[in-house]
Length: 198
Ligand SMILES: [Zn+2]
Image (cartoon, rainbow, N blue to C red; front, side):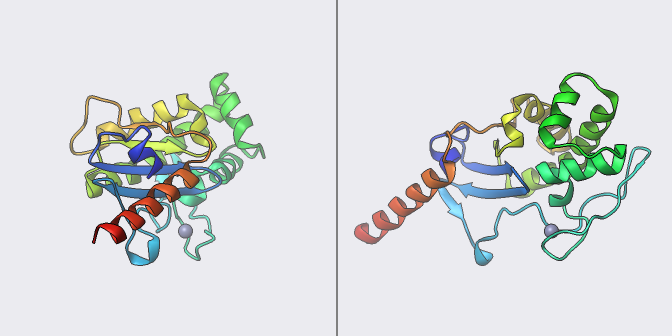
């Protein structure tokens, strides 16, 4: 909500906000309103057994997920997931920040991990874009502070969508340090406005 009203999604009718933090999360805003049905999990694209078993020549196991399933995007796409993926692919335990620093430095093992990460995330995210009709995907959370990673993800996702937009689709979030609080305040204001206007 913060991104849709004040951030990178401002002016877009449908905004699919993504979080690349410890894990992967998301939220869907349509015409300035949060789509919040089905127990509040609408837009949670991180769970479900969607990770392909092979990317290029690389076998990817279906890691167990905290939600009880295995092969969820959440197991490979947040900070812990990136670390898990890197440990599996390279045999090296490293923190996400260090993996990304090595990727920026052009170190081959980190490049392989990040390229695999991008391939794993791009397909499900393109599907989410098709499914929701979102025209902008603000990306927040700790991993998304690496804007080069967000740009690389954008380049990976756009060719996989049906609309293949020429403008950036996945963009860094812009709504500051406490987007959750801002979004909650917006929703609270909307609830009160609805109550007093009816
Ligand atoms: Zn899961």
